[in-house]
Amino acid sequence: MLYAILCYHDEDFVGSWSKDQDEAVMKKLAVVQDKLTQQGRLGPVARLLPTTAAATLRKEDPPLVLDGPYAETKEQLLGFYIVDCKNLDDALDVARDLGAANPGGAYEVRPVGVFRPGGISQ
Amino acid sequence: MSEADTAWIETALTSARPQAVGALLRYFRDLDTAEEAFQNACLRALKTWPQNGPPRDPAAWLIMVGRNVAIDEVRRARKQTPLPEDDQAISDLDDAEGALAERLDGSHYRDDILRLMFICCHPQLPATQQIALALRIVSGLTVKQIARAFLVSDAAMEQRITRAKAKVAEAGTPFETPGAVERSERLAGVAAMIYLIFNEGYSASGDTAEIRKPLCEEAIRLARLLLRLFQSEPEIMGLTALILLQHARSAARFAADGTLILLEDQDRSLWNSNMIAEGLALIDKAMRHRRSGPYQIQAAIAALHARASTPEETDWTQIDLLYGALEVVQPSPVVTLNRAVAVSKVRGPQAALDLIEPLAPKLANYFHFYGVRGAFLMQLGRNDEARIAFDRAIALANTSAEAAHIRMHIDRLIRDNQPEGANGNAKQGAKAK
Image (cartoon, rainbow over all chains, first blue to last red; front, top):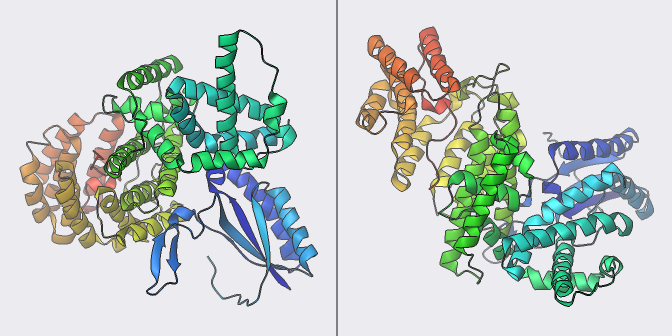
């Protein structure tokens, strides 16, 4: 079963990391990611640019484009992982490992319905 | 307490600071009292957060605690009776109180932060004092850090900030919720101040660029913060895009020996692609509003440079048009001079020279004018006149870096007789008013 692990955090907080702090967090996360990669369980991973760069399309008639992220909450969606897990417990274990590398905020764990790996790389 | 703990708490305090100090300023209506209350709350946080874990909403926690401690002190001073140590009570702030604090402040926090930023750009304060004050009270940098970035002694910076605070206190701060017109005036003032902070770091020479880089980073942080508070303001998008796109080039702007590398000579693989992506997304978003302004136009020019993977791909025709638009909304001889560089690429050096000739009286003491003029003359083969212009430029240079910059123009013109101009110095001439 594929699970999406969605990363939520307070952007003010993450945006206040120094370059060194940011790099240290990414390095710790890379350790967890490498392990998953070796096990052949890691799909696409994305870290999103700040929500200030986001626009939201409300599916009204006609559709309405708004500036900023969809949710006006303190904690925003800042990135996601797609991981192959046996079950929810397994997915939560992965989220725990990632959380140990990057404390604070929350991970939303959601089973994936449709998945197409696509063919782009950055 | 482990080092990781303290680092985490420091970051939380930094990010909560504008909102917390802004709210405390509204309660106490005095900057010093608000700052002191915040400092006290921070001390409590350092004591209790490592034991109890972080509060769900650090800003709300700091506002509550800061307020309570200050009120207790007033009481204590009145009654002269010691109150019991209430760390325990405070550290047990439950979520209900946290939520209450959130409700108290949620409605105000945009204007709180805006007010806090706005008092720093009081028109009576000279620009250097505005910037120093903002970095101290909004960003929470230490006097030592600010002094370092400004290349002055700690004592001189301390004095500068003290003077600025005294002036602000004297001038008084408007505390009522601003109306729409006033809010947009405040926004414009704050945007200009953020741009000043950025330019202070951006205009550093090669040997000080690294020391002054935190100013650019702080300006970006403040711009993003302002944009999060006012998501639909195209000029704030433009400002944020502009400074991101300019800062994206920072790793490519100086050679190892500290000399400035012209835009078209920069190694574009060193440009920061994430910052460029963010800047481009912001300018795209801003343009949808069809409410143009000087920051958006300058960001659009920076975006055209950023989109060109080689200098040859630069869309000079668009850049010419954009500078033309900038001349309309923010006329200045320096903008025209920058436009002339684009004109020289599109319509050749004679057209460019015709455009800048009328500027001579206004820019008689501007070294860049002669550098650009020399370049156009040289392209026209009028080498003797070009040499006179270049010599004048070097005579007018304020710093050795500027002189070196002009010599670089000369060298390259001698070398390959390519068109070149003021755009090599990526600092846009237009200054935010």
